[in-house]
Length: 361
Image 1 (tube, rainbow, N blue to C red):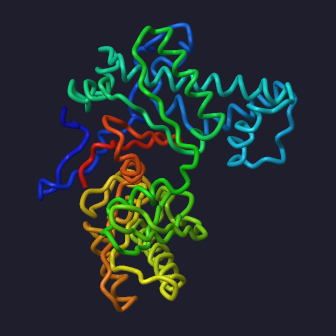
Image 2 (image 1 turned 90 degrees about the vertical axis):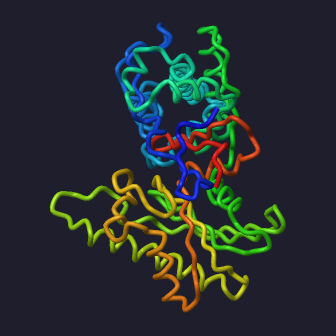
Image 3 (image 1 turned 135 degrees about the vertical axis):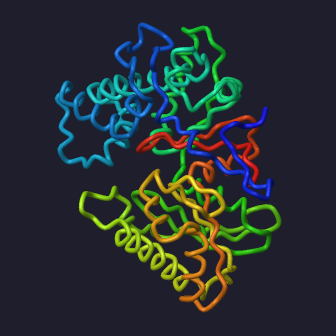
């Protein structure tokens, strides 16, 4: 079945993921299995599962067990939860199992919603038609990436998802976990590199700009050099009274500087090709960014074709031809798992990120 979440560029050869794929807007108008957490009814997927929700739950439940987490910053708490799942300390282990089970069950309910496709939930998602629900139901594999999918936490989630489907007597998806997803986006972009080339490959997220150099042989990666990440800037929402164009320009300058600095850092060690690959947290088609979704949308203020603008500015500053390819970050993740058929790759992070392995690029 043709993937209804994908569209074609004008060349009819290259596909791109449309924003309609977002899981975050789906609604649990009807909970697909009662008796687990019925209070979720009426909430969006984003209101049910996210890193921030897990962090807030850790803060609340830690107090119930008289566990002091005052020395931990928010970003450290999911890792603490993961370690606590194998802790010999009864209090820590009990806290971790309680939280992991709750959110594992929630993941199970969300996937079960997609699998069953009940009419109430279809009606609550008017931008999906029967094709979308049929495609999601008939997927074989769900691949989870991201910090919440790693190590023991991901394994616990997988067990709870299986438990939910067993109770519902529904055939489950095959759940795959990927422990180290730090560079899965840049490694996915490497699939788009030409053979026998060395390229700068970036992953522009809302927290960090990940940087790397990848050497590709004939159809395979021959070398991967990760570099220190750079803090993301200017990717927040435009506040009232803030000049959108000026903020977009500051973001653009920050990205250009990051790329230029990376090139200068690496050009003496590597023969860098003209092609620069960037996984970016924005739905885009052929270098044209989506102007409404995400922190990088504001770059559309500068140009309708941001990849072209970035290529031209970098070419001028480096005094050599540069061609930038932008890839939606969820798609970049999915490209890493290209060999897995009939699968969706879901990133468990600030919100759900989605990519499909059957995309043709």
